Image (cartoon, rainbow over all chains, first blue to last red; front, side, top):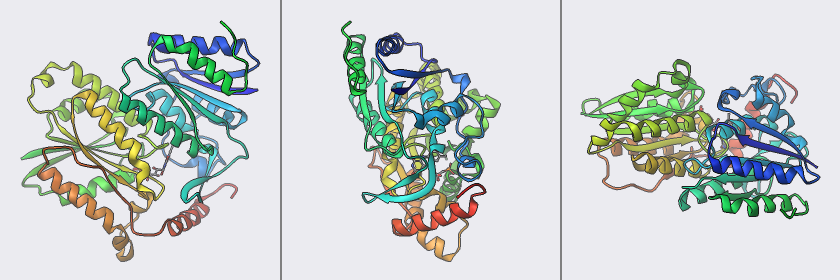
Amino acid sequence: MQVLLLTDESDESELGKSLKEGLLDLIGRSKVEARHFGIRSGDIRNCLGCFSCWIKTNGKCIIGDVGKQISDCYTENEFAIVLSPVKFGCYSTVIKHVLDRITPNNLPFLIRYRNRTRHKARYDQYPQLVVVGYGGDTSEAEAQTFAALAKANAVNFQKESAKVYLCRGKDEIINITGQVLKLMGMEEVTV
Amino acid sequence: MSKICFVNGSPRGKNSGSSYLIERTVAFLNDKKTEAVIIYISDLLKSGEYQSAFESIAMMDRIVFAFPLYQDSPPGIMLDFLGKLEAYLLTDNENRKRDSLPQVYAIVNSGFIESRNNRHALKILAHFCRRAGLNWQYGLGIGAGEFMKKQDNLLYLWMKQPVIKALSALCNELENPSRHPQDNVFVSPGMPAFIYNFAANKEWRNRMECKK
Ligand SMILES: Cc1cc2nc3c(=O)[nH]c(=O)nc-3n(C[C@H](O)[C@H](O)[C@H](O)COP(=O)(O)O)c2cc1C
């Protein structure tokens, strides 16, 4: 099974590092084939809002950096796992740049679905979005905004909803990473 | 004379719907009572000169962030800016000495006509204010931003009225701020979603140079 894993390498928190290591370790011992992009702030440019991907290039971003690589392979995966620090109830800047940059995977056309507007899909399949936010001092209100946002993102990327986890401390890592693996239909590995 | 700073967080800078909404609001302001400054995050990104922008923002009475909705939240460049501004406000001692920090408002515009889609972005701004020690007041969530940017004609002006009214109310608030935070306001141009979507799709088809 092909899985996309996105992590923020600019974030130097102990919690973030341990969470990433824990997940990579579990994935390494399972049958999951993960394509891991660890992104630093200098590696990725922001979306320019130019819409070239929609009107000129058939879904390819005109900026040739890691953001384009991620966008180009996004729909080849069964799952997309996003690990992000929670900042003001949103993602970190780096992860937000990535999400903005995978917009080319939709068509610009607007359709109505369950009485709401959404974009027409460019491809037949999209990965199930799994979002793991982390932060020791994330408030309850921020956690709620984060979860609601991740679910809205999944709808924008052609899924019914996202699976969202919030990790506030190292003691939660084993439980959360185990649940993520289980979600992908993999056996939980006893550590 | 109160000082108001508009921060344009669109990657498109001056050529954005956010810019149109800022200009509309500024036009309503009484220039004898208020002084308005506009900062473009897209310009700061190019110059890297954040310090003077932060110093001027900290001295303002009110700040209005105007930005587009990207994936149901503020664009990456807005988040980057908010993170840097937070760090500046929390470390600069002069700011800590001020008895009243600026009041904050936001104008978020989305591509879809559903204005309520902007709700998460407005909450994120409120969380930022709490962390940075600023006073969150309220935000406007505006649907069909690409339509708002279109040049005015009689029909369009009529359709834009609900949004223009909300901007005018924001202007009143900026001139006479309330003491407490208000509820966010969600508003779109007056037309049914299916008509907006139909027109938008027709326009996309016309603009497309690649396969349709
Ligand atoms: C990367 C990207 C993501 C977007 N995501 C959304 C979205 O989630 N919901 C929405 O309604 N519009 C979305 N839009 C459309 C913009 O919000 C819309 O075009 C807006 O009017 C742009 O405002 P501006 O000109 O001030 O930048 C997105 C546009 C881009 C380029």
